[in-house]
Amino acid sequence: MNTACLTIKEFTEAVGGGITPRMVRHYHQLGLLPQAVRSLSNYRLYSQQDVIRLQRIVTLKQQGFQLNHIRHILEVEPEAETNQNLIGRLQQQYQAIIQQISQLRQTASALESLLGRDEHCQIIQTEVLSQIKLLESDTQAGLGGLEQLWSQLDAEVHNHSEVFPESLQRLLPDLSNRSEIEQHLISQLVLACGDVSLVSFLRLSREAIAASRKALKSGCEIIVDLPTVAAALDQTRLAHLGCLVTTLIDNSHITTVTEAEQAFWQHQQWRETLLQLNTGAILVVGYAPSVLLEICTALKNQKIQPALVIGMPIGFSHAPAAKRQLMEQNIPFITIEGNLGGGLLATTVLNALVESLIDKPDCHCYLKETLV
Image (cartoon, rainbow, N blue to C red; front, top):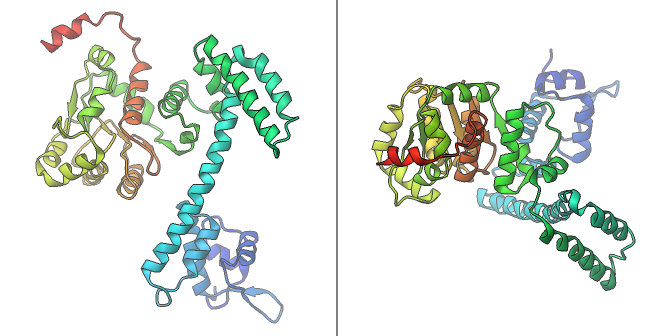
């Protein structure tokens, strides 16, 4: 293959990543790729430099960048514009995206208010939907009518408690390819944060459910990063299973992600404690990304062998990086891609797994004996 003048077919094969000639032509139209030179037979010809540029586009697209933002990033030459100027442009793009997300979130909330109604509200809901079609939404009278319709719907909520299963049935994507335990776990996560879009970012390794059930049945140790995470766990079920909960950063004064991150970096003792954990434990990280990074390093070096890692720290640079590293490990894991996470979501996952094993005990008296 002559890499100095590749045909479009050879070009896509050299780049890989599922790129097709049709996609290449589309990128030309968008300005992502410069127009190719033409052969005497009018065929497009590509160079090794074109291969490198398209590989960059594929990589950025896989990381979540939209095509118009990739174009802005690639068109800036290092010698032509400073990093500070590029950061400023990226900040502007970010703010524009956040505004679009906010507008979409408002639309999603309006749809959730309609689709999330249970059967008790269906009669009034049907009436409201029929009236919405007749609204003159571009007039003040139309807007007033819309507010009145929402008031009619909202009045129904005083007549009964909310029926969450019915709401979730209408709002969640199709989960028929998921196991019953996964469906329950996803439902609990959505109820914990009120955001259905979280489903798209949830990642479970293939062995996560089976490994967690086996470990919990054997009474494994549960290691959490902060006391606030331990406090949100279902201690009653865990006690029945014989699972002991241990807090890694065992300082009751450390309650925020900022404090946890700084404390873990400053004190070597907690890193040493992490390396001494028992084989087959379940690790739950709900706040500090550095804890998850340290776990990934220990896994890579085969220093620890947990049964499962629930990695959901909060952060905007370290947390996404830690989660990516976790998903590369040969270990059962459950995580949420990106910066989404927190102690509540991490404990919700473990509690849902525990709940799938044991019904809620009716009597908590034995807990008093174990705490004395």
